[in-house]
Image (tube, rainbow, N blue to C red):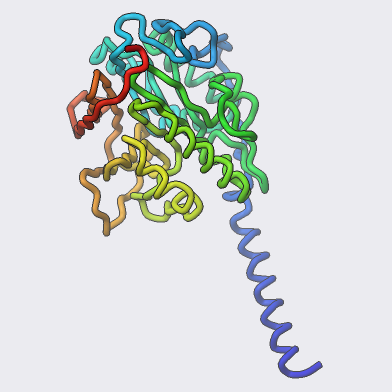
Length: 332
């Protein structure tokens, strides 16, 4: 064997050894699922109200869209970022008391800390007895709700808890979808399910069509992973290449995962958990912060969409933005 071939063989062996060591060190982080805690309380039978059901409290389905019974031409909803079972009953109750006119609430991934029965029961116990227990819910999964593995898998438990509309692309039905209201098309994207090249292209095409056929409505997108990461080490090349240009067509795009708050319209990253990350040193956000549990109140009336961001504990207004245009109200 020539000296050149021996050198090449040594390099290959070093790379293989390095890859083996890296996989051994990182296997649990990449592919290992932590042990599920034992739920020791009473099992609570509970069903979330969602827009996949035939009957939804406070709404009527008419002309292929959901209309608010009280006022079909206005809509108010609360949106939460990563929760990780860290919003307690008192905080849920406080949000409901501050905003008694809420029509539904939305959550953009990592609602429960893991896709386990234990965390599902913990969430239900946190919500039980609060007004949120009677509100419709829109939710898409985050990375913590998926089971890790060489191929990630969204457990059936998630679909059983949070059944969502089945109008999404193949392989993403029930986790990527849209919901139409008279003045709003609400689009949810399951970013953690994107594992193959065909997933990215399929979902990109579907989202493009959902935006282009919104019929003059405001378009609000919610996704777990951000297009523009605000926290260190959170940049996702696949998400950026797939959605950066496309989602500029939306009126607003909410994301989580970074455990920070950062706004650069139309992109808003938000956080509702107490697990905080550090914001990048170099950024050009219009508004940003870390170490605060936040939530958004989104209100739509005629030609105005307003987003107010509040602190969960105090209810103090942290940030606000208004978007105005003239959507074609399908109910008119």
